[in-house]
Image 1 (spheres, chains in turn orange, brown):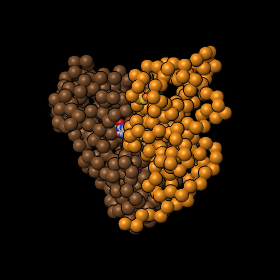
Image 2 (tube, protein in one colour):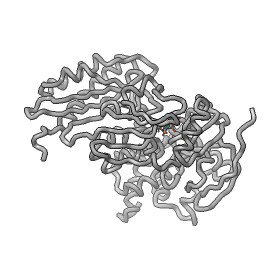
Image 3 (cartoon, each protein chain N blue to C red):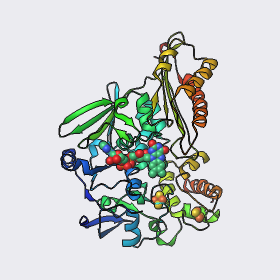
Image 4 (cartoon, chains in turn cyan, yellow):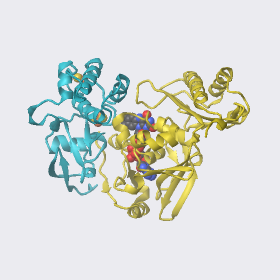
Length: 164
Length: 294
Ligand SMILES: Cc1cc2nc3c(=O)[nH]c(=O)nc-3n(C[C@H](O)[C@H](O)[C@H](O)COP(=O)(O)OP(=O)(O)OC[C@H]3O[C@@H](n4cnc5c(N)ncnc54)[C@H](O)[C@@H]3O)c2cc1C
Ligand code: FES
Ligand code: FES
């Protein structure tokens, strides 16, 4: 079988225009990791369940394993590499650090991308709302309690209500 | 876990989509949110030759109220339906049910049309669309047609859609503000497809008896079930707690249910009974006698 033609595409990743040539079936997650060497986006299940590969597409969280790179022409992708640009932790990263909310860190990038968007939409969430959203990101290490605490604490800091 | 090769199309207009479907329909798959098709492609359970990406069709991404209907384009994302103030006011049952689909990130991409056409037996949208008497609008080079959801979803993952057709939107009759409603589901883990779900809508007459009851159960059979006999028998009754308990038992006893790898039939009936009690109680609590409303 002659495979469908590879395509040259241009997308915006973390504010930079990047060009690459990909087969249509190339997942966005693989294009980020293999072609753009942005390996902070992790790949767990490749069918939408684990949340490790979550990035922002036009500011909204999305599974990069359920999107194709060719679809992203004209769209803005944000990955974990953008979050601590300049070497400073974001409030969410700092809170995860302070609460010991990661061990192996495999799930962490997906959680940060998800909650960066969620806390922008809902700045003062209840614990139950945080747990509901966190259900989309599997963590095999922490038991979730420190992650929930870190997110609630980061939300307070981001609202200007004191320390992490 | 990589998809088989395919040719990718990104048409800019509905006309171009209809041409592509007319040319490749049988070997093509429409790509909307990709939240169901993506896993199927990655697992190679779907291997279409052509993938037609409809995400550029901004016209299909609109929702609006028109007269007594709420019209939602096929490409409207679950998150938009769940959080739209107008949707929550005019279509509270739909908004509440859609807000429980999958996870936050899944709801940002998943679409009304995709979920309906995917027709998972446990999915929220086919269930509440059945309870709300929604109409599906379908288009092809041959023309436009509209069918009730009850005639559209045929079986698990099977809908009455020809190879050259696309769903362009759904129309929902507005819920009345006096109507009581409830959506209840049970999942082992949050965001999983539910083992069972129940949707209830009811209207009270001036004397507080039931003027109308609609009751649908999802997840127990290949398609969501509307319990028409039970609905007809409920009219004229006072929806007391005793009636709610009896009715919940009746729902659980009569709904078609099967054993499968996730739950036994008996367990499913038990879940349906508990969900039905909660749904009926919540719907009765929300309902207002029509007269009291301005
Ligand atoms: C982790 C996870 C959890 C989930 N949990 C739930 C859940 O609890 N409940 C639930 O209901 N769903 C759940 N889903 C599925 C989700 O709701 C999907 O968004 C939905 O089923 C499909 O919508 P989509 O827009 O992503 O469609 P796609 O995946 O793009 O397409 C699905 C199918 O519909 C066809 N199609 C799409 N749009 C059209 C159209 N306009 N006309 C004709 N055909 C069309 C496609 O060709 C394909 O066959 C889950 C998904 C994931 C990954
Ligand atoms: S790798 Fe994408 S959700 Fe698991
Ligand atoms: S820290 Fe290891 S999976 Fe979450």
